[in-house]
Image (cartoon, rainbow, N blue to C red; front, side, top):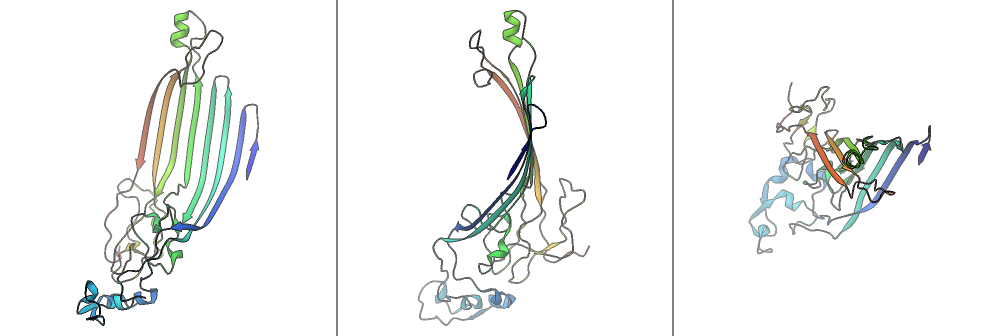
Amino acid sequence: MTLRYQPWNNWLLEVAWVANHGSRLYLNARPLNDIRPEVRDLGSQIAQSVPNPFLGIITGGTLSAATITREQLLRPYPHFLGVNSGYSFLGNNIYHALAVKVEKRFSRGFSALVSYTKAKQIDDASAGTVRPGANSSIGIQNWYNLRAERSKSANDIPQRLVLTGLWEVPLGRSGSALVRNTLGGWQLNVITTIENGPPLSISATAAGGANRPNIVPGIEVKLDTPTLERCFILRPFHSLSHIHSGTPRGHCLTSRQTESSIRTCRSSRISRSRRDTGCSSGRSSSISRTHQRLPRLAPLSTAPRSE
């Protein structure tokens, strides 16, 4: 849905609401031999060694040893180390955005464009891979509950502001041919992008497949005055000591980045009656700068901190 309003000549205000929902998105192979959630409640007991009932039946590999872990016997197919399905279509995503644009069309030697987007993207899959907590390098904790993997997307950019301006330098419009050819036809283009970076995910390993820490309820993660050295509070997170799944799904933690580009260009004269006002055929130079702020991550403790 888009609303447009022209308050003055050569000015345009545009407000749009954009929404998109995807279901049954393509995912890669799904493991079918994962332990069920109720088995995880046994904690460290499932890592204990027990007599192997397949001894003498399976003659090679890990399952031919005298003992195996209790975890292996509690799998849906205990006589196989791994069972994977073909491709599946279990992914979902949703995107909402408010986009505001103010445009001043080219007149009186300059034009301007200001675009702002406030958006949120949530999913449990990106590029064919389930990626919990906006982290594409770790796998699913619990394939029996994909809803728990739903979080901010790895592509989520909460806010984005783009400032664009073009100014035709008012020099060289008259005078000698040398003055017109040297000072005339120059333009100054400025593009600045200020946006939040992608989500920062926190991972922690534990026996049984967990890949993110637990979060302690009631403790705020964000700092009121974050710095480059310390961007969030570590106290809400602690690692798992038993075979359980971590609680946070992604995070409210994001980086911030700014990118600026300044370009000068000079249009070339095609003939006395026609001049190319673009920059592609003339001389140009540009200066760009990118600044990104990322928090420094510290290792997690194995238990909640007391402070």
